[in-house]
Image 1 (cartoon, rainbow, N blue to C red):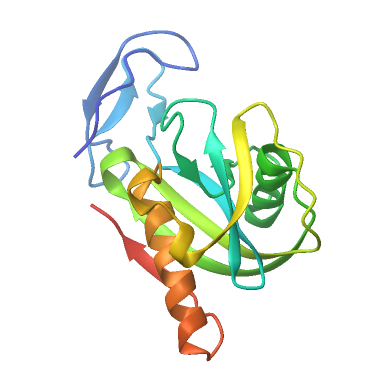
Image 2 (image 1 turned 180 degrees about the horizontal axis):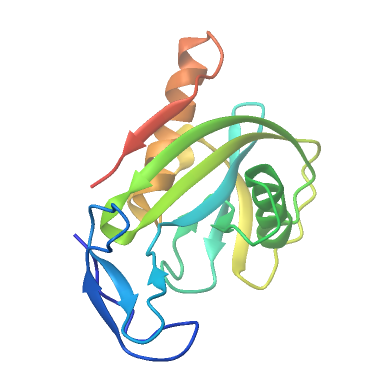
Length: 182
């Protein structure tokens, strides 16, 4: 089902109507009433890391909404002209100022209700130096038992951390996890 949030054509400014285009599509799309441009509404991509040092993970206390004052993994929206990996590394530098070695893709989490897909990479921290940016009130390392699970900003962060510590306890290395969250 379409969210029907597009009101005007981005190409010419004319009003749009939601209908199934005549090009064989099967979903209602925003179609311009003047120039017939079809506008697609696609999920936003969120990229981040699970920075870890030994058995501890780096979390950032948010200085912005949503989740002001809550803890999160360093992450944010992917920018144009960057890969998933580049975006995740950039977000980690911006939010925590951590020196990391990027690892494998760890979680891919679809969040259909908000139209987002979150990708988290493992990232080994090279040292304990941190330089949090303006979106972060505080950044610090946490052992699993120290995490205030009820003070995490997002369900994708909670699930990614749960999987990280479960894989770590299992001792067989880290897998790739793909989930859909309600």
